[in-house]
Length: 344
Ligand SMILES: [Zn+2]
Image 1 (cartoon, rainbow, N blue to C red):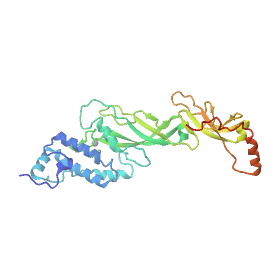
Image 2: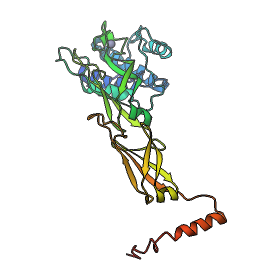
Image 3: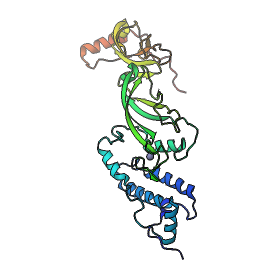
Image 4: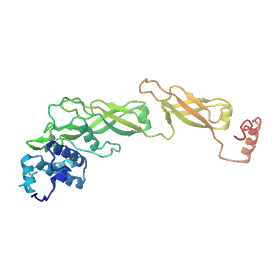
């Protein structure tokens, strides 16, 4: 006769009653990652679920307790007595914890979520196994948005970077003193946040990645850390438009300036430049200012600034103006649209 189970630990871990130790461990680690308090800050439901998983694992991973549970449907005493990961998690969420690690989600729109960090880690160096060869830690990527000016001039940004590090209490095994490690809740990994100063080179373009060596995931078994890649998103500028290393702008000119020629001020990312508009310049014509564009991050050579002339019409209409305009029209030899096709 099978005992009726008040709490079905097998169901909690999503495993068969015939599951062996490695099945149990695998199921536990998978669920623990998903419902880990560091991954679900402030989520009471996940917290409850994590507790249930902890309890189920504490019983089923212990041969004696499992036997007792399988036979009687219950285990004497509290299987997780003396172990409350949440007392620690709550304390940590306010200020810096005793180990100086705190998960901080503030202001990081494009930040990689912790679930990804865990899956990356577990996809690479697997904790809990001993005598594995050293393995390089996974690369990590995070996104950051900067202004157009910072991109073309270069800047240094301060980033809170979350890294998963092998738990120093249990050495990554997830087990301390024959029970779940209290520091990492048995997962073998802790998350640390450190402020990183990242130099973004002059000329960085939207979508570029800046590599920060050794600031990715911790390597397993003493292996080297992976790299951190900071993906840069550049906010567009209202006036300057970038095309590779070249910068474009549109410069309004008057009809007399276009007709007679003029010297006009053209703003560039390196400051204003006096530039020529030759006599007889048509609207839409583009001129080049060599070396006034963006510095290439690799060749260090500067691109060009291209300005397109746009003839603007005076806003004020007056009898005197109309007279001038009629006179100006006499300057055209015939209809400027004469040479255009009339249809397809
Ligand atoms: Zn640990």
